[in-house]
Image (cartoon, rainbow, N blue to C red):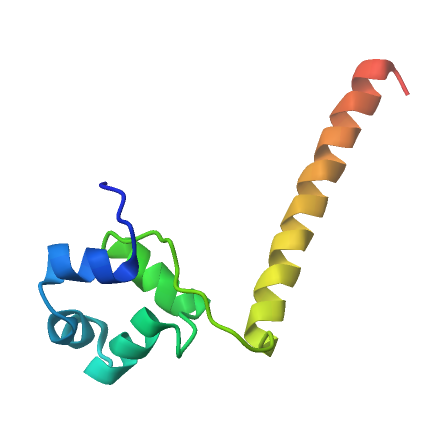
Length: 98
């Protein structure tokens, strides 16, 4: 999968225009425009759809506060890391004979 400089670069090279991607995603063209300009955050479910279509960042930066959805995604990632770390610690303890 080629690496793209930006969402705008990917849309231009793969989809040719915002309207084509918007139609495929089932969103309005101005929604795609807002993602590209950073006026609207590309939320995790949308990112997953875009990844399946061949784009995996970088994601446009958006100012403002974190949303509840953002916090939930971060919480899930922290939980996953903690579980992995605990599993590693168990293996190390077993190797150390404790």
